[in-house]
Length: 322
Image 1 (tube, rainbow, N blue to C red):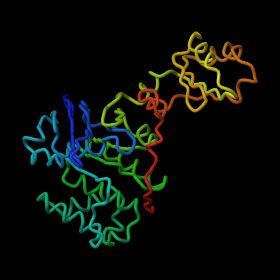
Image 2 (image 1 turned 180 degrees about the vertical axis):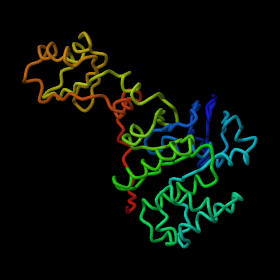
Image 3 (image 1 turned 90 degrees about the vertical axis):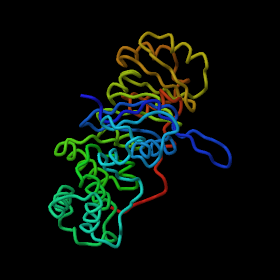
Image 4 (image 1 turned 120 degrees about the vertical axis):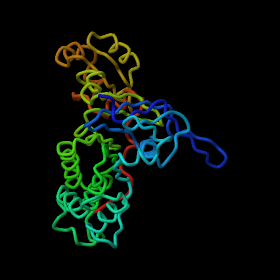
């Protein structure tokens, strides 16, 4: 079965103050049908620009985007029929009720059996009881659930979710995850999710692509990506810098990689149990102030492939009440 979404060498350039900059740089992706695919990266990495090109709001400078075989630049209207979209920012009419927001959207798509479809969409996201309350009175989590229901009311083949849990508290965030998984089970849709929450990508996505500075640096399943960088990580906090120690550690059997970061040494090893004893022989207590052992995370994957921490992925100063 061919992929639901294909990007081939897609690039997007903008001009600002007579200067050109590249927001998305020659990315290629294949997103399988009926799965959740995550586009993971810090703020400004190019995630929203990529989503905007897929949903036809922006035209690629170069490259091709296919949705179920349809070229989005050649048959824009046909491509849009196959897409449900949840924007990063809320786009609901706050003065209408939840039901009225969905009814308006259903009219735009000329949906038959409009009332039944609206009722089904509200029921799916648990908003039947609050359907006739104005959206202004909804919490942030309720608004997100309403936007998800709006995205699926015309029964699209794929749903694009651009930072769907941005600004939500942890409880509301987990609730949105449950509804996204429910969509896959009940509707068998393809979901493309952009997020800068590492836990979200790992929890939801069967495959992810990490994007940084407009480029896809690596893609695969979360487990496979973590396995590539080593099974365990040993973190050594040094009391004093010792350049020779890092070189000696790299020569040890079982050590795949050694990285220096803010005075600490990160050792990516195949088997921590076999490495820890010979490791202890290399240094005295006077050299080391601390030692940690942990399993690789997506944060470690990002650091491994980009050479810098995921610090830029901190949530913006925007809070939405649950």
